[in-house]
Length: 72
Image: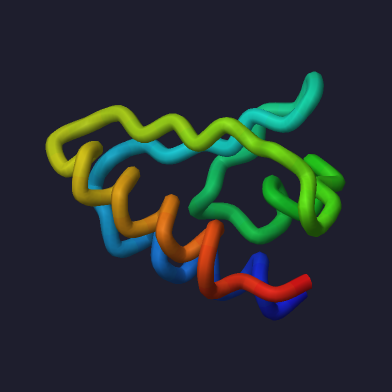
């Protein structure tokens, strides 16, 4: 649960809409319940989609967080 909380807390910093696409699920990265509901397993590939005014910054920073700083 801690990695999800860390991800969501960081996602809420941005104005952009941020979602995680995993298999057939689409999760709002700003919602802990939404991300948990997607049932994303540690080590699985997800698509990170950021749309809005600060989308590039959000994408770059969240991508780094996901790839290098979250532990399952």
